[in-house]
Image (cartoon, rainbow, N blue to C red):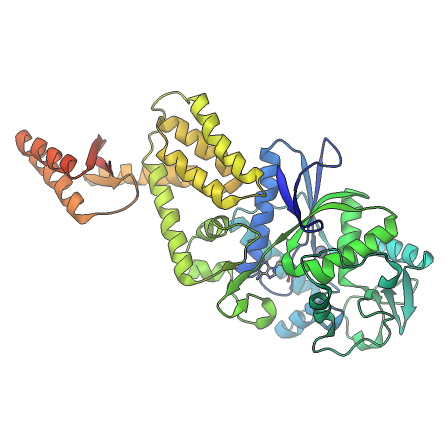
Length: 483
Ligand code: AMP
Ligand code: ZN
C-alpha cells in the first residue's frame, strides 16, 4: 500500500514500525460548536484509511483527542479561547459546552458511518502528561519561561519547517497577520506550551503547574495524548491540511525534542472542502452541518459518497447541485443493489477475486477512493451471477461504509411488499433510471397478458427488444435494462 507522506512530499510504501500493530493518531474536533461538513470530510477520509488498513489485514490502534481547552481563535496563540467563546455565546459553562458538542460530533459521525476511534481522549484528562513533557523541555533548554507563559524555543531545532508543501513565507503569514506579536516570544514561530498570563484570567479551566496556575497550549495536547496511548512512536498522523502548520509542525518540534528521536513516520493531510467563497470554516459563522443536510432531505451517506468520489489530496467544492448529483447516484446504487437476486447461485470465487483486485489496486494507490467507487460500479456491470456481485459489494462496503447491502435489501423488500399488497405490477429498471415510454409498453404487455392476448404480449416484447430493451419477469413485476 502506498501513501502520500506530507513530510517527505512523496508517495511511499507503507511499512508500519511494528508488524503486529499500526499506530494511528487523528486530530479531533474543538468542541465549541457543531462540526461542519468540511471538518467531516477529513473524518470521513480518515475513517476510510483506518478501515482500509484493517481490510488489508493490519491491526490498528487509533487514538483521537477532543479539544476542550487551550485552542485560541488564532492557531498562533492569539485571541480568545474557543471553548470560552462557545460558553459565552450560549450562556453555559465550558464543561456543558464540551459535553454537548462532543455528543453532537459523535452523533454526526454515526450518521456518516464514521467509526469511533479505539481511544477518544479529552484534552482536559491528560494535564499531568503535558506537565511531564513541558518539564523535560524546560530542563533540556527547549523551552523557556517569559511573561508568565512557557514557550517552545524553535531556534533550538535544526529544522522547524517540515511540511515543505508550503514555502516559509506562506507559513509565517498565519503568525504575522492581523495580530500583535507576542513580545515574550524570542522567535516569531515560538509557541506556548503552558499559559498563565493574566490576559487569560477569565479562563474557566485552570490547573496547578510548576509555572503557576494555568492551562496547556493547544499543540501540546496531541503530543501528550498520542504518547499516553501509543507510546514513543507513531505510524500515521492525520488531520485537515490547515493543521499542517502551525499545529502539526509544532507537535513534531515538541515531541522530537522531548523524545530525542523521530516520532511519526507518515503524515496524511486531507485537503479542504470549499464553497464558492473559499474554505468552509466555523469561525466564518455560516457553515453546513449534517442536521441541515437532513432537514433538506439528503441522506448523510449521500454526502459520504460525494466525498468518496474525489481524492483526499484534491480540494473539493461543495455546491447543492453537486450534492444533488451525489444523492441521485446514491439512490441509483441502492436501486441496482435491490434489483440483484440473492441466492441465484454460488459465489464465483475467481470472479470475486478479480473484482476485489480492482478495488484494492485503487486504495493501495494513496487511498484513491474515487477509483474504488468506480470498482463498485464495475461490480454491478460484471458478467457474473448476482450472488457474487452481492458478495463483492458487501466486501467493499467494509471500507466504503455506504450501507448498500442493508439499504438494497430494505428496498427489495419494500418493492415486494408493495406489489403483493396492492396486487400491483412493479416495473424496475436495473440502472435506476425511469423512462415513461418504456414503462408504458411494459404495462401494455402486462395488460395483454392479463387479457390472455399472448400474441400481443409477445409482439410488445419484440418491439422493446428491437428498441434495445431487455425484459425479465420478476415476481409481481418486470425488470428491464438497455442492451
Ligand atoms: P477543528 O474542530 O476546527 O479543530 O477541526 C477539526 C478537523 O477538521 C481538523 O482536522 C481540521 O484540519 C479539519 N478541517 C477544518 N476545516 C476544514 C475544511 N473546510 N475541509 C476539510 N477539513 C477541515
Ligand atoms: Zn492535533
